[in-house]
Amino acid sequence: MRVLCLDASSTTIGIAVIDYDDGYKPTLIHQEFYKPNKSLELTDMLVETRRFIIGLAETHKTDEIVIEDYVRFMSGKSNSKTTILLAILNMTLRIAALDNLGINVVPYNVLKIRHALKKTKTIPSKEEMPELVAEILGIKFPYLYKENRKKEVLPIPECNDVADAIAVGLTHIKVMSEPKKKAKTKKKVSKKKTAKKAVKKAIKK
Image (cartoon, rainbow, N blue to C red; front, side):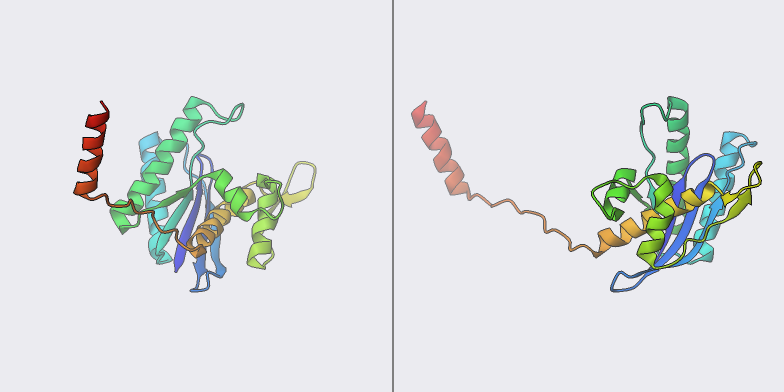
C-alpha cells in the first residue's frame, strides 16, 4: 500500500509518501514541502493548493491519504483567524481527495501521533520528530540546510513539517497493524421475557 501523508498549515505543507507491506514495514519513498501562495486571494490559494496535492497523489499513485488534523485551539499559540484558515485548508484537501480520487482522507490528532511514536513516557516535541521518525524508518533524516545571517549552516524550519507528515503516515501504519476490536453485540431479549418483566412491574405498582 502507498500512503500520501500531509501536515498542512497555511504557511507550509509537509509532504511524505510511504509504502508499507503486508507486515506493515514502512519505507519512505518521497518527501518535500509545499508553500501555499499567500499573495493570492484565499479562494485562488485553495484552488492552487488543491491542484498541487491532487496532482502529487496521482503522480505517486497513492492508495491512501492521511493528514494531521488541525488543532481547534492551543492557548497562546492560536487565534480564531488561524484556526479558521487551518480548518478551511484541511477540509479543502480532504474534500478534494474524496471528490477527485475517491479517497477518504484519514485525520490524526497531533497528540495521538506523538503518543503513537514516542519511545519513552515523555511526549516528543516538534523539534525532536525528525530524528524520531528517522530512527523508526532506519534512515538518516533528509535534512535541507541553509546559511543564516550569522553564517551558521542549519536545517531549515520546513524539515520539521516534513517530519510531521512522515509521523502521520507512521501513525496510520501502526494503527492499521493493530488487530481490529470486535464490536460488542447486544444480547437479544425475547419478546416473552420483555412481556414478563412488564407484567411484574405492573403487579408491583
